[in-house]
Image (cartoon, rainbow, N blue to C red; front, side):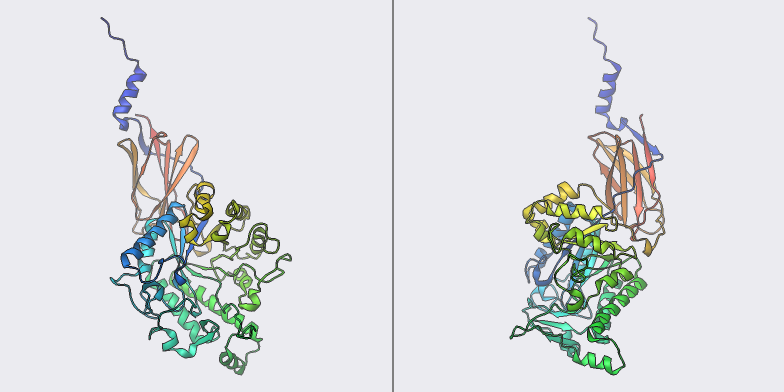
Length: 501
């Protein structure tokens, strides 16, 4: 009896099934992958009044850490690429500071370090970087006590050590921005963090002079800075009181920017002011006048380039008649004469109430050529998936990873091309390995591979030296790997080409 002859193609299929490594081999080649997507995708993590973290004061350290890591995991799952973490809510610290006391929002007691001891900022920086996330340290430069503070004020709080610098205003304690000693203190606090921690950015929000409060008679109170105002006038100052206050904020921001760059040029400085500069700008806009009430000339800061990114809090809907998101965004884009990053702030809480609103806002940002990303307030609705807002991000808006846009004014020197790129089949998957050229560890690795006619992208932390690709859809024809530095610059690609065995 003659046995049927097996066709050669069938033999090949059986061979590949038994030995996947016979499917493909990779060697040095040329590849021209498209430029990667560039979009800032940030989220605020607020610690004041335990808005986002920790969930309440005085939790066991293990629970605090678990909550913090869960927030970072959520950010990474949603393909965000930056976290803005509040480290100084009110002249206190969510980190080990020689200038200010431990925050009561952490331990429940101002001035008390967590036990067993750990440094939240140290952990959040390292764990964010392990997930490929930038970590921006968020400071409130002049607020000294928030109404949510209930613990006894510690002996090393500035209201006790230097009471002459502190003003009582309504329900708050506030540092007087008109006192040079105040500016020096807050700058020292911020620069201490820049020097000691591997942060990616410094962030300030909308609190400069305080939002107005009324007295018992219902009248708006003026900020109590008579002594510093008199000192200014007696020294020959010619500005009006309002202009003097604005210049106090201006001078602080100018010096902050230059001092941070002197320490670490690629640490970005960002500001997130109230979303309206002044009513009537543009003409249809009505609302709070931050220029007059907070003494915040945010248009000047942006136009002067005293920052690397600008995130006006545009917390209104796309169809709001007097504060339209796209109308305000277009106006702010027109003020960007220094070509800094414009990354508007969105209220995830508010957009979650209206299906599709966040998508409309982010798409409006993408249509605006001078805006290159978004910043979400805050992480809690993303964790809760409030109104499906997290699904909207992962399924509609952020379906693929993106790099933070480069900051060419901070440096254009490209990192070295990766070395020793290799690929081999391991248990049916493709194992890719590489090395860093030179001594400097890149910030990130950008891996791209071609499936059919489509290029896919993954981003890995700089400490990583291998990746594993699932090959269920086939072995990629080409691979390309590039290094990314802290300023966002890309190296030349190292490439591999597939050859059939």
